[in-house]
Image (cartoon, rainbow, N blue to C red):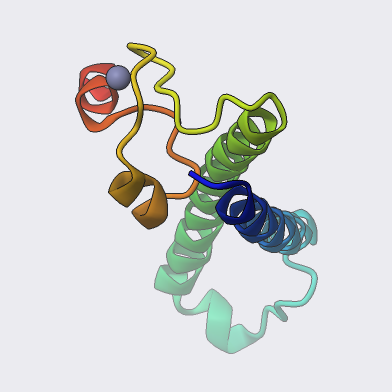
Length: 120
Ligand SMILES: [Zn+2]
């Protein structure tokens, strides 16, 4: 991969990082508000199902935060690899990660076969 491609990639990763950090603070704000923005009227208390769905929303938010955190880890990992000039080298086997994979998944740190072994 050329230096120009790498610096373009670096920019894309930085933009992605910014987006993810914004997303994370947005999610944290929402789940940290304690639901003060939801007014409990008589209508709501007569509908326990609404409470359930609010709880579900919070669990969903937590899952989203976890997901964002793991993506951030990967993005940071890729940025560190670019800085260390090891971008595109598989963390698992030390081989080259195919460029097509890197284009599809800029923060990939493993080749497909190592990734699938890792996830098993
Ligand atoms: Zn590998």
